[in-house]
Length: 449
Ligand code: 5AD
Ligand code: SF4
Image: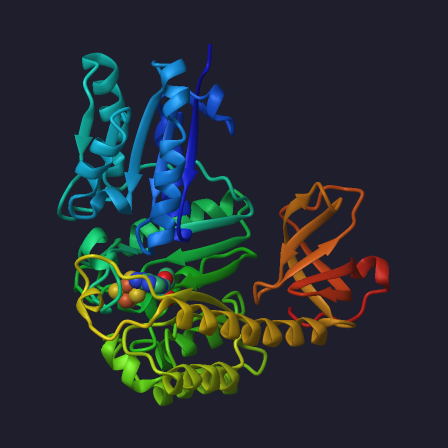
């Protein structure tokens, strides 16, 4: 009988793509995917530790497996991802959940097949978490699950040490992949029919700054955008201290590069930005947004914001609100500050009380939603090109995103997944748009080419 795997993923896009790599390794061992715990021969938790609630979520789900494991002792439970890289966490996991079979790190996920073999042969628990980043391992084929979108890592790790962030501790120092490996991967994906490529790194602007690639990010972006074929190109995440003219110049050269930049601002208060060790001011941030929008009038910016950082006053919070309005974000991920052991901010005094944090996040979400709604409404009557990526069973509609990440829904009798479809938008509902393919609506002129 076919062996089955199930992967449970927490956290960001980086982790989602790492789960595709884990899936690729498991496919190589003959496992096939199931979405049901009860059917699985191996369940892998790909954890995230960036905020406490992501950790608690994983702890809860791992704990819930205890019964199944008792009923099915042959089931292998493996826990990997950033959380296992945190100091003391592997030991804590072993203590709390003695039924876990394998603990592996985010820095050595390619070792998983060998650890599984060892577990099956020796019947002993296996714990192998690499403490320090090593050489980049090339040649592993991810099992991609999000056609027509594909993610491509360009670098790993982070050197920035923002004072609230655990990433540099658990993901190690920056390492950049060689341009020839990245280009070969992109060419292959385009040849296979992928239509949207997103270059991934914790801080893509510092690609190559370790001097090992002979190329900086702007040059890499230029080279990737020069790959022939119709596809969209995105990149994530940019850092405001590094983002600027060089990248914008390359964007101008290639219409393939989406006019949407994810530029996390974190706070609108210069005092808080300094305490966060972000190394830019709100003024410099807004200048960058302005630079981008003046070059491409249609350009949009999305962001990440943290409220309730230690020492944040009402005045600091209001500075964030002002910046949000001035930058006119297309959307924003908003977070309540979560102290992470080992980071500078965790040691800071003057913590913001939870009820104040809660009040601020509620106000901020309302503000961000109002911007997003206003932008959605402005779409009505326009024609936009979306890349169809899925079918929503409940709605009975196909869906896809435009170049600015806005979701558009439409009806079709034929399968349109993987097609660029021009949609005449008839209705907006919150962040969702509903439209009719322009070939049906009488072919209004497209906004994007
Ligand atoms: N608390 C809250 N949010 C955080 N982020 C990173 N670390 C923390 C933390 N300790 C947010 C930042 C980052 C995004 C990926 O997660 O906004 O950009
Ligand atoms: Fe964390 Fe800052 Fe690095 Fe982003 S840039 S991963 S927030 S340390």
